[in-house]
Image (cartoon, rainbow, N blue to C red; front, side):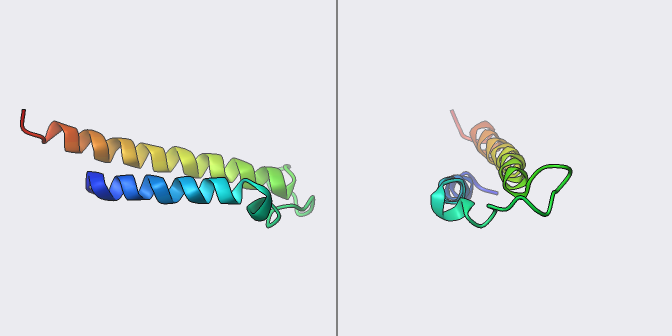
Length: 73
């Protein structure tokens, strides 16, 4: 993944993060049942977004650091 596509990924992820964890998106998960790993559905949705955030940020960090090491001085 190039640095440019990593930056595009972070912008798309950021917009999706804000939309899905605010009013319009959170209504998709706004249920108590079914419980997922003992958590209500809404809490499991937020926890899932946190895990996805970690993965996206690791991928972007590796792509950007790989690009920085290949830049000429």
